[in-house]
Each structure stands twice: as C-alpha cells, then as structure tokens.
Length: 214
Ligand SMILES: [Zn+2]
Ligand SMILES: [Zn+2]
Image 1: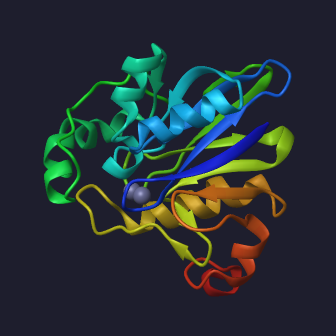
Image 2: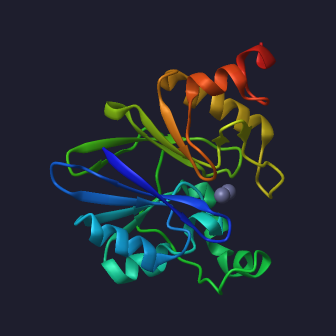
C-alpha cells in the first residue's frame, strides 16, 4: 500500500490518501476539509478513488467527507455506529470549533471489529478502538505493517477523553489489547503530528509505555 498524508483543517489533521500500486485504486481516510487539495492530489497521482473511510465522527476528521462523496460518487464507510451521535451533531461541532457550517450525514456503511475492506488488491482490517470516541475505528494493513489510528494514540501522547461518550479506561484497553498485538514493527499514522511505531510507544509513551502499566 502506498500512502501520502495531506494535512487538512486548522487542526492540521492528517488526512491520508492510500492506494494499491497495481490497480491505482485509492481510498481517502479522514477528509476533514480542504476537499480541493485532496482531489488535486488524487489527480496528480492518477488514482481512481473507490471509497472514503472515517476513523471517528469528529469534525476535523469528517468535515469534508460529504462534499468529497458528492463530487466523486464514492461511498462513505465508517466509523462504528457508536459514533452516530457525533455525525448527527456536525452542525453544532462546526459552530463550536469555528469551522464552516457542516451538514450532518449518514455514512453508506458503519464498520465493526474485524471487518475487511479492499482497496484494489490490498486488504485493510478494521479494529474497533473505543475511548476517544465510542465508535472510533483503526485501519490496519498487515502486508505493509501500517495502521491509521486517528485520535487513539499519537507519538508521545494519547487521545483526549474529556468528550461526551469518551472513556479513559476504554482507550487504554483499546491501545493495549487492540494495537499492541499488531506488533512492535507496525508504523502508525495518527490523526495529528508525526508517525511512530508500536514498539517506540511501548517504550517511551508517557501514558501507555509498558513500564507504566505493569
Ligand atoms: Zn478526535
Ligand atoms: Zn482529531
């Protein structure tokens, strides 16, 4: 799987464009906004967009999803249904965070733990990782040891859990029981900031390093 990240919105959210090199079929993960910039990149790489994937319902991750779907005709897939309330209150989120007015939308499909998705010949596995939001999902591409983790974990930090429906205990369980088993060599692309690896965070993350949780 090839990928590039495209920082979008004033929150510099890492929207990822991922694609199968053999077929040039592509997916966009978390198009929070700046839809023109995303489309330009799809055209520059000469890709065929086949789906929009969402990790969770926060506006900086989903604010451009409906516009991108309307322009390209592809389906919006994810997050888990437990984030439905976040998508329903997008108009309120856009007001609260000073974003352009954003309509609520219903994705074409919600995701569940262990769902499999195909981008060309490449397969992504879905991991349900509640905590930051109850319906947060992560996309794991085993063949290239990559995971797109949204706001579950960052380099040196973890997701906020001070939102309605957040749970710190769930977040720690998601990280240690769903992400750690992927293996130390897995590189993850977080929703904000630089990439890291599972091994690096198990050693040095000030919230979830192994020696802190034992
Ligand atoms: Zn978030
Ligand atoms: Zn975010």
